[in-house]
Length: 351
Image (cartoon, rainbow, N blue to C red; front, side, top):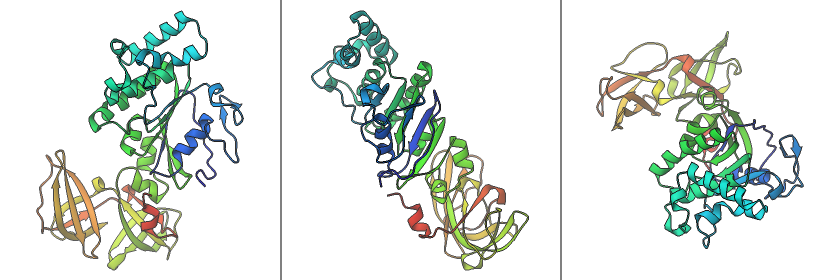
């Protein structure tokens, strides 16, 4: 199944993103909302109106494709005013809207240019203007920035959100780029294998992931396998592989249960030598990478697991390859998940 038992609600004037790896069903879900794919079961409502049998042109939507889908033989002006003309709007109204849309995306001076004469960023802005010119209140964006280079993609993501918010539109944005989704979305639905695993604000998904895949896909995490040796008052003690000890906060797991402990790289502290304190793991620095504002350490623990530690480059003591170190983390900043029935590697896989 391309989309499996998905149930969610997008609020009016919300910038909502469908986030997940390629093939997870997010584009199919978007195309069902648009009316380009008919769902085999379930219902789609737009503005409290059942639209399952309604054709795309009657749903009041604008669709922006990753490939732009501009008419190559039409100049910018004709592309943007195509919708109003097809709907037989008055010429004055069509011209007024066309000018307004192109000025909004700063392309009115290029109104006579053909698509092949424009950069990728310009073509995407024309595609956006065309979708908006037809009077759409719901904007559907299918990987709209995927074909652009990194710098233009970074700049245009904020321009997209600004336009949507300034015009009071509702937007549903499909992407596999978690940084893009986190930067522009009011809420995000994380999908895998046709299902929505979790949805919420970017902060909720980052600070409180409820699924091991979400913890890995939103940001970065270290995953340590073990089992619960003691559970009391919401606190648990975990024996990691190789006999290493750790503790966490969780009320859902029980003694003897196999678990995965997740710790984000920026949560770790790192010190030279062998320190004895709660949630301290001893190991050796295996690799050091300077990343400008941060230093990234890969530390091989006593049990041969490797964890990634990220620390600010300007404030911290630097460590070198081979240094014996202790990495530590607070229990309340870690996450504990039941061990996946299909195995950890399979559950984390980005298909």
